[in-house]
Image (cartoon, rainbow, N blue to C red):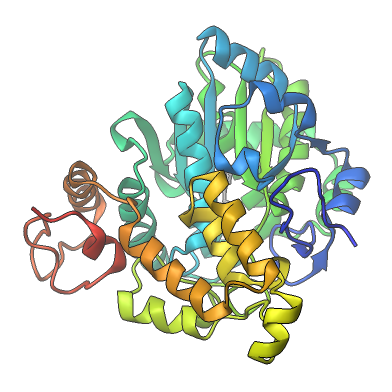
Length: 399
Ligand code: TRP
């Protein structure tokens, strides 16, 4: 079984969606993916990556070509990180992994670009442009600000508004990809896939349109086909583009044990779930506890099958020693699943996911992009939007 153990926190995951950017259903294994597609492990660059719990806990597990990016970053040269989101549903703890990774790179000095793939959602998810935009503003944009991404220092755009140059570039790139290459990378070359892919190549190379620089794309491994072909295009296109690097994160499993999916509300905690909703979902979550108290005390819990532990490890416990203590106590049977769940709640209550400043910025940002102002008027920290009794807003430290 593919369960890396090169880390004291060895609860890491086994299941991965297969590599198809539009089909999240298939399940595969990380090691196979890495070997088959030549994704490099993090080992050789761990020392030059920013210190972050995702790095220490193997949540970021692989990359392509990160070394030049990191070296330039260390030297204080210009670097760019770009990622994109296709509106699909509520923003949840799985999405937060990518946001936190981008934030890590932004804090280390990389320029950040964030694209909302509204055209891709229109073409591949049959979503209306209006719905895609509303979801993007209401869910993604607000929460990116709330999670502390500095949006004033982020090049943020919608694909539908990327501009003529962007779309001309994406068309020009088609000269450098053959039908064969495309089909062997994506399985088939339906018009919607072709259009979405070429738009994404332009997204990824956009930070280099004016002046080339080392670039990286923090994403889930499902996006690797896009990375591979963008690297090809970057190499062949007659400009001095750097081949974009990539940094892959593990997917969090859903609370119910399967895949975390926007279409299964019980599988995730969304960033806008109310505290009550979140509590309920945690109560219903799959645990690694034993069937009876007596058995649990004797055998101990299994952290690798415990979705609450996974949440703690991904997001809620920053301190490694603390996480290690929890793991030890749970595995020894000293700590019960119920206690682990209560711990989670305490953690999420005290979690500093937010600050005053971010709350202020958040409403300013979402108001800027909203099609319709909220009927309740703009929310502010002092007057949280009554229409959204959300986790994040509740967690803000009110004066
Ligand atoms: N295809 C990505 C998704 O399904 C969204 C996306 C569009 C993207 N452009 C991008 C991701 C550029 C990374 C970089 O979520």
